[in-house]
Length: 278
Image (tube, rainbow, N blue to C red):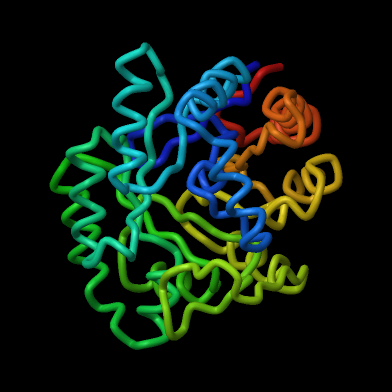
């Protein structure tokens, strides 16, 4: 299944990308769901899910630059896996540079700064350190990006840095003004008003955006959401979706088919599309 491609700097990836929050137990649905995901996702099951993503036409995974993911991906690649890794820095590791270096040495094809970190640094007026972090990624020859849940992060970025791509969360579900890390069990909210503000911001951005948390962390069905995504996805943009096949063993393939039907076909009708299946 060909979803078309987009470019993040000089990296070409499929328009549909697989996320990894479920692999690490970040359900954004509460502690019980977090534990359920951790128990389900053995190394074998994660690798099986990645192979299913390959079969469904996905060419890259967005995953944390922590040691567990690095070890997992090394094993997956040694066994012939082909997904490229777009690495996300991890605030619990300490300085942002630590996550960047993990991505570089771990074989990432691109690296971006964690969204909670960006939200936090903006709120604390410490965001001046980000240009140096992006330069560290570029010096390694990789595309450099930033993520965020707050549209103001990207308005700042447009004026102050030259990122290669953005990771834009549809939902600003837990403001990170005082702590960058996600904390399991803390209240979260998923308001469509936040989603609408983010897609309005994306429309004004000069760089490719990866739309993520589009399903409100599993609260909405792809068939309900993808028509909205299609209306707001620019030809240079991509979408990241996580999967929990315990709920539906066919989830990866069915979601990819719905993405093809609702999103790719609409993008194909745009004369500005880079490459699409006709």
